[in-house]
Image (cartoon, rainbow over all chains, first blue to last red; front, side, top):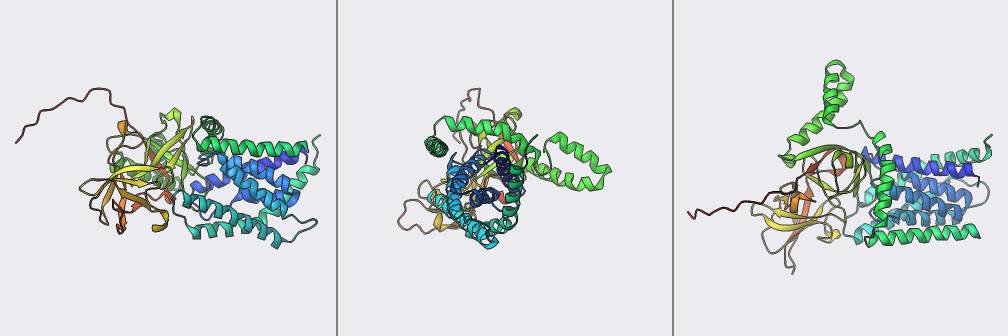
Length: 162
Length: 272
């Protein structure tokens, strides 16, 4: 991957995380998990190693962007595992949109289940219908964002700075 | 091969940071405040509306007279701030008005952390009480120059000492006070400190801490919404419906209480 591609992917992660936090302050619900969509598109395009690194970086951005997470590094590990698993689901050549949506949906379900278990273990009640809404929103937005992110990254890699 | 080793080193470093943060080590706090110093202003920039200071609102009100369209937005801000300053939660306290500019990664457990647009430069420090017009919101956990992070009541890390009902029975609210499976999402667990009466509809207010940090006394937390059968437990427990709906929060206030500096005079009982 070229330095430009890495820069663009980092910017996309930052934009996704900032949007998630500031749209949350406007109390919009259900909010799609934009960082997960960027991580998933990296994994689906470039394989498990890129998925893992993108997930780790994206999770760290969410961990550090105020208000951050309760324990630093937990989001990073969660998204790294998500990116790794999504990367393993990569198929060579052109893939169908259904496959992309299914993989992103499965990753979103995995994230929600892990977060629910952590919340229940620390004595906080969970809202299952809110989780369903977020999974549906994430899978739906992946339909649009994954091809967009892929084409933006491809274009960024083809362009060379003079 | 070298690249793969680098990736595994990064993952291992993340695990180490998470473990250090879990046991309360010093490093992650520095990371957090550094990131908040850099990224906080970005969030303030993208905040809904603008800054909720008194001067801004006065300027808004002046514009209200001339521009009707802007007046609609300004008056809703002014109304929210006026409601906050008139509410019993802020009575007699120095309040720093603030706006919610960020909400932590949404999860199934609801909103656990918030970012507000006031920080160290506004006189805010860690362990201050955060209130809204309705009652208690939570406490400040970390402060950057321009923003602060708030732990919201109902999250796993906020446990409040409280008084319940007219009799003022001592109780613990929130945190792991009661198992989460027995109450609805958004409700808080409550456990009395010892045997006492607990009835649906009782008001729950903060007990207060030394110097009002992290919680000032007498702020409304919520009302008792259900009482669980005692079933062999020593103390009665139940659920509390919070007075503030964090899901719709826009304007909050940080209470600045002064520590006591003069000795309290003793008094003589009259005995009649």
